Length: 227
Image (cartoon, rainbow, N blue to C red):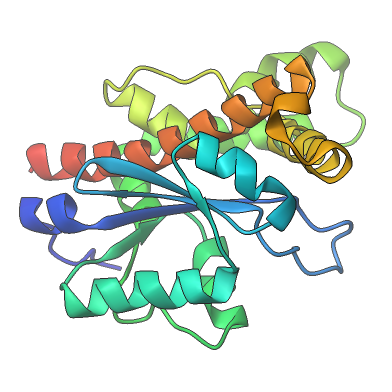
Protein backbone atom coordinates (compact mmCIF):
# COMPACT_ATOMS: atom_id res chain seq x y z
CA UNK A 1 0.00 0.00 0.00
CA UNK A 2 1.44 3.42 -0.96
CA UNK A 3 2.40 5.69 1.90
CA UNK A 4 0.76 9.08 2.16
CA UNK A 5 2.94 12.07 1.19
CA UNK A 6 5.09 13.23 4.08
CA UNK A 7 6.54 16.73 4.41
CA UNK A 8 8.92 18.51 6.77
CA UNK A 9 6.11 20.73 8.07
CA UNK A 10 4.06 17.68 9.09
CA UNK A 11 7.07 16.21 10.90
CA UNK A 12 8.01 19.47 12.61
CA UNK A 13 4.48 20.12 13.89
CA UNK A 14 3.58 16.57 14.89
CA UNK A 15 2.83 15.31 18.39
CA UNK A 16 5.05 12.28 19.04
CA UNK A 17 3.30 10.03 21.55
CA UNK A 18 4.48 6.93 23.40
CA UNK A 19 2.84 5.06 26.30
CA UNK A 20 4.63 2.93 28.87
CA UNK A 21 2.85 0.32 30.94
CA UNK A 22 2.83 -3.24 32.12
CA UNK A 23 1.78 -5.83 29.59
CA UNK A 24 -1.21 -8.15 30.02
CA UNK A 25 -0.86 -10.98 32.54
CA UNK A 26 -1.58 -13.51 29.77
CA UNK A 27 -2.47 -13.59 26.07
CA UNK A 28 -6.21 -13.49 26.81
CA UNK A 29 -6.11 -10.54 29.17
CA UNK A 30 -6.39 -6.91 28.03
CA UNK A 31 -3.45 -4.61 28.58
CA UNK A 32 -3.69 -2.59 31.80
CA UNK A 33 -4.07 1.18 31.66
CA UNK A 34 -0.68 2.73 30.78
CA UNK A 35 1.41 3.99 33.67
CA UNK A 36 2.63 7.07 31.82
CA UNK A 37 2.85 8.82 28.48
CA UNK A 38 5.52 10.94 26.90
CA UNK A 39 5.04 13.46 24.13
CA UNK A 40 7.46 15.50 22.08
CA UNK A 41 5.97 18.64 20.54
CA UNK A 42 8.10 21.30 18.85
CA UNK A 43 11.17 19.43 20.07
CA UNK A 44 10.16 19.53 23.77
CA UNK A 45 9.55 16.36 25.79
CA UNK A 46 6.69 16.29 28.30
CA UNK A 47 5.91 13.56 30.83
CA UNK A 48 2.41 12.73 32.10
CA UNK A 49 1.78 10.05 34.72
CA UNK A 50 -1.59 8.33 35.26
CA UNK A 51 -1.01 6.61 38.62
CA UNK A 52 -1.59 8.72 41.73
CA UNK A 53 1.18 7.01 43.69
CA UNK A 54 3.63 8.36 41.10
CA UNK A 55 2.33 11.93 40.81
CA UNK A 56 4.97 13.39 43.12
CA UNK A 57 7.78 11.60 41.31
CA UNK A 58 6.51 12.93 37.98
CA UNK A 59 6.57 16.54 39.21
CA UNK A 60 10.19 16.18 40.30
CA UNK A 61 10.99 15.16 36.71
CA UNK A 62 9.20 18.21 35.31
CA UNK A 63 6.08 16.23 34.48
CA UNK A 64 2.58 16.15 35.89
CA UNK A 65 -0.03 13.67 37.04
CA UNK A 66 -3.59 13.37 35.78
CA UNK A 67 -6.20 10.79 34.82
CA UNK A 68 -5.73 9.22 31.42
CA UNK A 69 -9.05 10.15 29.78
CA UNK A 70 -8.64 13.95 30.08
CA UNK A 71 -5.09 13.55 28.80
CA UNK A 72 -6.27 11.69 25.71
CA UNK A 73 -8.99 14.25 25.09
CA UNK A 74 -6.51 17.15 25.35
CA UNK A 75 -3.96 15.55 23.05
CA UNK A 76 -6.62 14.77 20.45
CA UNK A 77 -8.14 18.26 20.69
CA UNK A 78 -4.74 19.88 20.29
CA UNK A 79 -4.02 17.81 17.21
CA UNK A 80 -7.37 18.64 15.64
CA UNK A 81 -7.45 22.36 16.42
CA UNK A 82 -3.77 23.00 15.61
CA UNK A 83 -3.60 20.81 12.49
CA UNK A 84 -1.02 18.46 14.00
CA UNK A 85 -0.62 14.72 13.51
CA UNK A 86 -0.25 12.29 16.40
CA UNK A 87 2.69 10.03 15.59
CA UNK A 88 2.96 6.61 17.24
CA UNK A 89 4.91 3.41 16.60
CA UNK A 90 2.51 0.59 17.38
CA UNK A 91 -1.14 -0.39 17.37
CA UNK A 92 -1.20 0.08 21.14
CA UNK A 93 -1.59 3.87 21.05
CA UNK A 94 -4.72 3.87 18.84
CA UNK A 95 -6.12 1.03 20.97
CA UNK A 96 -5.76 3.12 24.14
CA UNK A 97 -7.76 5.93 22.52
CA UNK A 98 -10.41 3.47 21.31
CA UNK A 99 -10.80 2.08 24.83
CA UNK A 100 -11.97 5.58 25.82
CA UNK A 101 -14.27 5.99 22.78
CA UNK A 102 -11.79 8.25 21.00
CA UNK A 103 -10.20 7.77 17.60
CA UNK A 104 -6.92 8.61 15.88
CA UNK A 105 -8.36 7.81 12.46
CA UNK A 106 -8.08 11.37 11.10
CA UNK A 107 -4.90 12.54 12.88
CA UNK A 108 -2.88 9.40 13.64
CA UNK A 109 0.38 8.62 11.83
CA UNK A 110 2.03 5.23 12.31
CA UNK A 111 5.79 5.80 12.09
CA UNK A 112 6.40 2.07 11.85
CA UNK A 113 5.09 2.11 8.26
CA UNK A 114 7.86 4.48 7.26
CA UNK A 115 10.42 2.55 9.31
CA UNK A 116 9.55 -0.60 7.37
CA UNK A 117 10.14 1.27 4.13
CA UNK A 118 13.39 3.05 4.98
CA UNK A 119 14.93 0.47 7.38
CA UNK A 120 14.02 -2.79 5.68
CA UNK A 121 17.21 -4.60 6.62
CA UNK A 122 17.05 -3.50 10.27
CA UNK A 123 13.35 -4.42 10.52
CA UNK A 124 14.09 -7.88 9.10
CA UNK A 125 17.00 -8.39 11.51
CA UNK A 126 14.91 -7.36 14.52
CA UNK A 127 12.00 -9.57 13.44
CA UNK A 128 14.29 -12.57 13.10
CA UNK A 129 15.99 -11.83 16.43
CA UNK A 130 12.60 -11.65 18.14
CA UNK A 131 11.58 -14.97 16.57
CA UNK A 132 14.79 -16.66 17.74
CA UNK A 133 14.48 -15.21 21.24
CA UNK A 134 10.86 -16.32 21.70
CA UNK A 135 10.90 -19.77 20.10
CA UNK A 136 10.77 -22.73 22.42
CA UNK A 137 13.71 -25.09 22.52
CA UNK A 138 16.31 -22.65 21.22
CA UNK A 139 19.79 -22.70 22.72
CA UNK A 140 20.72 -20.25 25.45
CA UNK A 141 23.58 -18.87 23.35
CA UNK A 142 21.36 -18.18 20.33
CA UNK A 143 18.79 -16.45 22.54
CA UNK A 144 21.47 -14.35 24.22
CA UNK A 145 22.82 -13.31 20.83
CA UNK A 146 19.35 -12.41 19.54
CA UNK A 147 18.31 -10.53 22.68
CA UNK A 148 20.05 -7.28 21.70
CA UNK A 149 17.95 -6.80 18.57
CA UNK A 150 14.78 -8.59 19.65
CA UNK A 151 13.30 -5.50 21.30
CA UNK A 152 13.14 -1.76 20.67
CA UNK A 153 12.49 -1.65 16.92
CA UNK A 154 12.11 2.13 16.81
CA UNK A 155 15.43 2.60 18.60
CA UNK A 156 17.25 0.18 16.28
CA UNK A 157 15.75 1.82 13.19
CA UNK A 158 16.70 5.30 14.41
CA UNK A 159 20.22 4.08 15.21
CA UNK A 160 20.59 2.62 11.71
CA UNK A 161 19.76 6.12 10.44
CA UNK A 162 22.44 7.84 12.52
CA UNK A 163 20.78 8.51 15.87
CA UNK A 164 22.95 7.35 18.81
CA UNK A 165 21.55 4.10 20.20
CA UNK A 166 20.01 4.17 23.67
CA UNK A 167 20.84 1.11 25.80
CA UNK A 168 17.54 0.90 27.71
CA UNK A 169 15.96 -1.95 25.74
CA UNK A 170 15.58 -5.65 26.45
CA UNK A 171 13.16 -8.36 27.44
CA UNK A 172 11.02 -7.34 30.41
CA UNK A 173 12.98 -4.19 31.29
CA UNK A 174 10.10 -1.73 31.10
CA UNK A 175 7.82 -4.03 33.09
CA UNK A 176 10.53 -4.51 35.70
CA UNK A 177 11.09 -0.76 36.07
CA UNK A 178 7.36 -0.11 36.33
CA UNK A 179 6.79 -2.80 38.97
CA UNK A 180 9.66 -1.36 41.01
CA UNK A 181 8.40 2.23 40.99
CA UNK A 182 4.78 1.19 41.54
CA UNK A 183 5.81 -0.69 44.68
CA UNK A 184 7.91 2.20 45.96
CA UNK A 185 5.21 4.74 45.17
CA UNK A 186 2.65 2.68 47.04
CA UNK A 187 4.81 1.84 50.06
CA UNK A 188 6.80 5.03 50.57
CA UNK A 189 4.70 7.76 48.89
CA UNK A 190 7.38 10.45 49.25
CA UNK A 191 9.92 10.18 46.42
CA UNK A 192 12.79 11.19 48.72
CA UNK A 193 12.21 7.94 50.65
CA UNK A 194 12.51 5.72 47.60
CA UNK A 195 15.45 3.35 47.39
CA UNK A 196 18.37 4.23 45.16
CA UNK A 197 17.44 1.34 42.86
CA UNK A 198 13.86 2.56 42.52
CA UNK A 199 15.00 6.07 41.66
CA UNK A 200 17.33 4.61 39.04
CA UNK A 201 14.46 2.56 37.59
CA UNK A 202 12.30 5.70 37.39
CA UNK A 203 15.00 7.61 35.56
CA UNK A 204 15.62 4.73 33.13
CA UNK A 205 11.91 4.41 32.40
CA UNK A 206 11.54 8.09 31.57
CA UNK A 207 14.72 8.19 29.46
CA UNK A 208 13.50 5.15 27.56
CA UNK A 209 10.16 6.83 26.88
CA UNK A 210 11.74 10.11 25.80
CA UNK A 211 14.13 8.34 23.45
CA UNK A 212 11.27 6.50 21.73
CA UNK A 213 9.51 9.81 21.06
CA UNK A 214 12.62 11.36 19.52
CA UNK A 215 13.37 8.16 17.59
CA UNK A 216 10.04 8.38 15.77
CA UNK A 217 10.79 11.91 14.65
CA UNK A 218 14.28 10.90 13.51
CA UNK A 219 12.88 8.07 11.39
CA UNK A 220 10.34 10.30 9.64
CA UNK A 221 12.87 13.10 9.11
CA UNK A 222 15.35 10.64 7.60
CA UNK A 223 12.68 9.31 5.25
CA UNK A 224 11.86 12.76 3.88
CA UNK A 225 15.52 13.74 3.56
CA UNK A 226 16.25 10.64 1.46
CA UNK A 227 13.49 11.35 -1.05
